Amino acid sequence: MAASLLRLHFHDCFVNGCDASLLLDGNSSTSEKFTPGNLNSARGYEVIDNIKTVVENTCSGVVSCADILAIAARDSVLLSGGPFWKVLLGRRDGLVANFSGSSNGLPAPFDNLNTIISKFQDVGLNLTDVVSLSGCVLSE
Image (cartoon, rainbow, N blue to C red):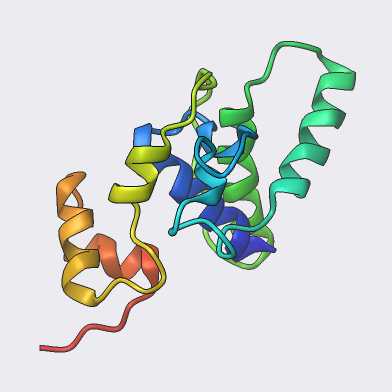
């Protein structure tokens, strides 16, 4: 589940910043969950829901879903033998999903390499970021 939680966080942050808008439920024309880059690809929603339930039972209304998503991604990487990094807290949860931004901006599983690179560049990321975040193997 570590890779799935990291991917969930990445997909959330890629569209409108790290606002947990990917977690918002809705229908197939409003929820980011149903866009090509997320449908049948993003997993781990139930893990985040379970963590949020435990956190809310302990300290209701204090920790945002966006912070939980960031911490869950970091901790899942750490528990899998990856590095630790400090997660700055204080994110605010988005109240509206960005279906259009997720549909058009987020790389989809069927996008070719040039399209993926272009979508990364559109949000200020470079070729190293493509390799790091999507696991692509690039050759010249």
